[in-house]
Image (cartoon, rainbow, N blue to C red; front, side, top):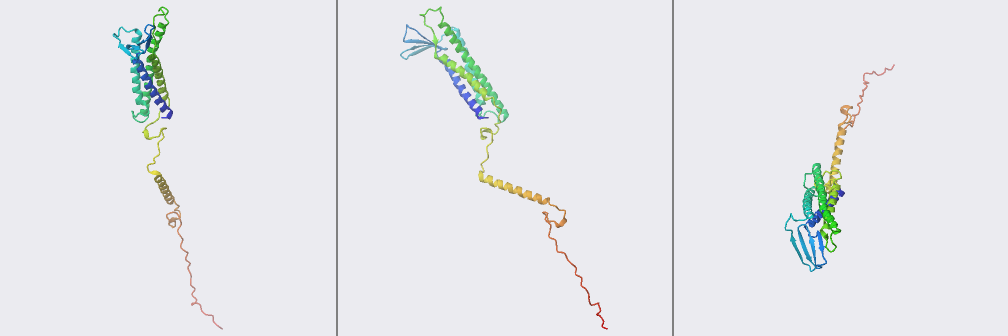
Length: 280
């Protein structure tokens, strides 16, 4: 796996976790809507999904949970349902993405393991984007209703109106980051599959590392021994293939034997049988 894909999946995982924490904070925060009146300048009211709070300027804060679930406004009930589903889907996506990371040894090595990791990351990215949409829907819906009620002309101007709280902005950030995290995880899966059968002992780009356990001296002498053995075998084979057409006079390696000197037969002349010349 290349450096770019590994960096993208780590970045996507970090953004994913930060986005899920933002969604969790949005669900638990009571500052979805705020209200302040001119009658009580020292107090302000905050409305959340689970409770309402009264905040005093002196630093005191008193919260009270809702008495009945069925008696809640429609927007609060819809926001509760969507945010809970968003958290569940986002958590499931995180659990699927973690085993699919390159640095996590969760599957068997080889192409099958890489394919399984990629499927896990793609599934986690899809669930992350779904969780982002589920988080943006209730936040945007509550914000839309708040704007409509704030500019309602049928309500007298002296009546206090609810305004945006900090939880709405946190929810928008969390939903947007969930979408970005899903896209980053998708982008990390666009490259070709890499064989990780060598495990972490191979280098980062997939090339096997050289074996230097014997040291450079052992490699040098091993190379010399290999070359020497090849030279002997080559010489021996060439000797066996020597020309034996000259018969036994050629030696084993094809060199001719030294020829013995020729023997010349010396014929002696018998002069005893000749008769001496006669004198007259």
